[in-house]
Image (cartoon, rainbow, N blue to C red; front, top):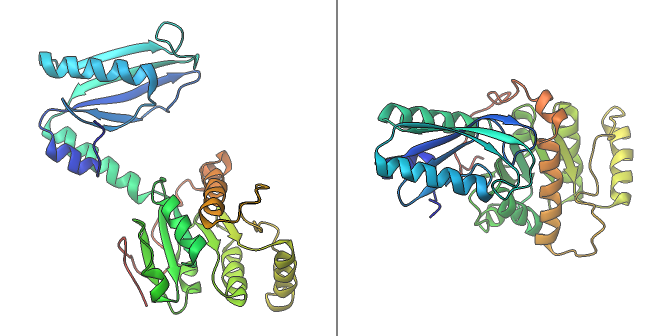
Length: 292
């Protein structure tokens, strides 16, 4: 059984746990070095990539739990020997967790959570809410922003929501390396928010819903009202996959994939080194927090 909830909740509920960690990766592997999985007698938290590798690791961990063993190292070729075709080789460390180990793992998880890239969905209409539904399952901190409390109230996703009379202020306060998806109910507001995001020059992604015609209108508007600001790095239309399906959930799926491709690229990883810090100005909001 894969345990739901946070790692802290999992570790608190399980008395005996084996930590499985990828300590070395050579060649192709389903996960990177440092990846962790936690195995209890009847539950799991996390994954080291699935397949036969994970099956072997879980069995080894549960053998340790049964036999009272404390530590074990595994060197596993990801080839025909175990029925996988990655072609690489991984080394695993399995260790029984003490109370101090559980505390350290919880602290690591909290730091990782704090370091997640921020994705600001500016507009809580049909597509904005569909995007929130997508991002709640991805390794990002999603913030859904709108001027309309009645639209924000329709969001059922487990993301942070903010009702803001001045939504551009949320863009100003965002951490460096954030992603901004602009899809409000008003084209003028779209232009204002998009140019505010582009003006930062440190966003990992800036996208605006619309068409090639709307992009041209924004370019002309920015030339006239924003000192000739360039929109070269703007994605518009967003989620331009060639699909003819205009349902909000389908559009959201393509846009989420587009945003995640930017956030997880090698360029973004280099640019964001040290960038996950406090907001530029303003205050912290908890998940589901609302600000005026």
